[in-house]
Image 1 (cartoon, rainbow, N blue to C red):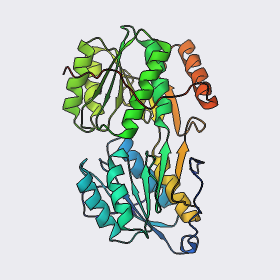
Image 2 (image 1 turned 90 degrees about the vertical axis):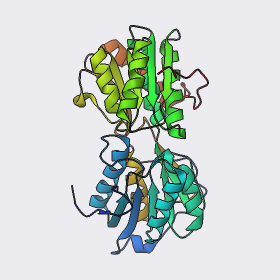
Image 3 (image 1 turned 180 degrees about the vertical axis):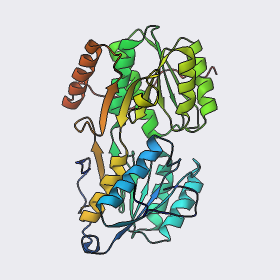
Image 4 (image 1 turned 120 degrees about the horizontal axis):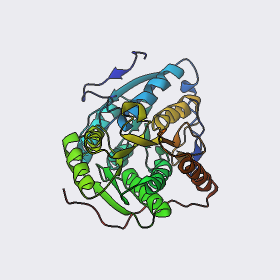
Length: 343
């Protein structure tokens, strides 16, 4: 890994790919300084840890890869608390360094980005995994709801107890959409299954996540889908101790714990950071634009299943993936069922 990245003193932070554009009304930002010998200055805000092994780390990986491939000067901050005021203050400090682009990772950053982008109209802002747009703001996202839906479908097919569950931390848009997708996938393959779903309020607290997982297991769950950062480790412990299985998200976790991870709903968010920087350096970045990538690019979005999963289940999942891409299966973005709070 190259060691050119600069970490600002706010806290201890921060491929070629094809995105499909959700909006294409804005003119491309053609800044010739980014296509000659001048390095573009890029700053990344990661609200969690760049070493969480999952979603937050994916943003850092995208920045490192972009620094290897493009002429940029990169800085980053990390571990900003999930608080709009604190994230906004961190973004302002980055903006005062006058970068060409600021990338705020994750839905936790969305409210702060909306505020700060208006205060610094000459800087290009990007929010990942949201639909935010503005005169100097665009969004880049991998469609994690597609792989989350497939995880739900697989959980519905594989459960022996007819009870499956979901655990996430922060109640933000991407997490809510992922939960809705997982729930719909379960219902599609097993309408009689019970779903237990919990937002703990904390993506990092492994002890809290373990307590929730244990309560869900006690209530009958034998398949747990986690959309967590470092807190996922607590669920892994509970699953191992009780002999149940876990579906992860973001990356393939099977090698981490083959006895626990029966599947991974991959949604490689590193491509959002990389894609935004690629567009900046090539002079094709556009404001007022949402760019998305989904199952059509399996390097970015797919469901990976453990070798113990029967082939007929894998075949059904592959067929479902085709139907999602064709539009035959439409994934909902809202869940209106009960929440599991008995922990």
